[in-house]
Image (cartoon, rainbow, N blue to C red; front, side):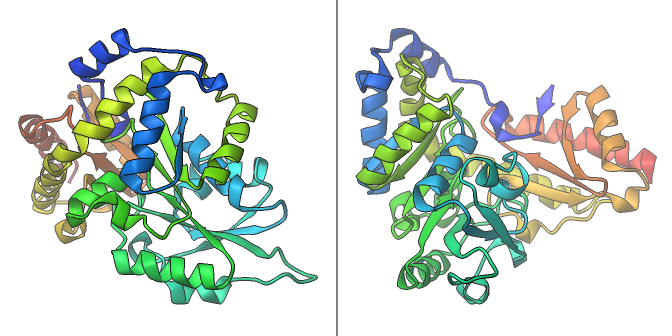
Length: 344
């Protein structure tokens, strides 16, 4: 199978597997796992933050980041297609006790002017704004990248209003690769940042939350409440260290493959996609003119050895990653071309 459903499907490299087998471990709930400690120290250093916290999933990382900055009964401003609103089982409400205030934005990129209009002060009729959340890259907008000046404007504006900013940076290293800038520059003014080790970076499990020492100390307690005290987690952190240190350098290959696929998909009858909108490793394309729903096409692709998911009846999303080389992209394109030519 050529799996283009997500970069979460990546398998650990041989080097990661060896590191996992040989990892020096201890009880991380006691703070005694040396490999987890090294991973957290290195993540904090790379992002130029005071501290970091290793968590099993990106959803847990976002949940903890939001919880550390908010109080029950507040609102969290986010983009309308954001992951925290649509794909994290309402954890902002369930655990943090906050309501999401969704703002639609072109390309999934919020602007300070649009955010400022929605900020609500303490009052007798509404939930006051407690936090601003941004997603970089933005998954369901097609892997779009926040311009650094926009992030800085949002953070400066939020801080002037006494608000914090949490960045869902699940794929922040893809943004860094696309812009040719280090992640510390892209996240410098954000108060907390979550990023995934298990997507484009290829680790089998794990995400990181970075921020202040005080926030991460409280976050460690929230992690325990959520069942994230994983004890001898060094076997996972060992793979995470390799993902963090070595895998960002190759992300441009995934971006090139995504752009290549988008350019050729745009030539196919019944498919609509703007290759210029593809900035990283995600391609969202419209199949409405094929006359078949995305679920039908997905099922047909699967019978021919290619996995691509629909995100609604009219659109599909493919994601390139290090387990799918250019040759496999070419094979996937042939399957799509053959299937679509029959449908149209």
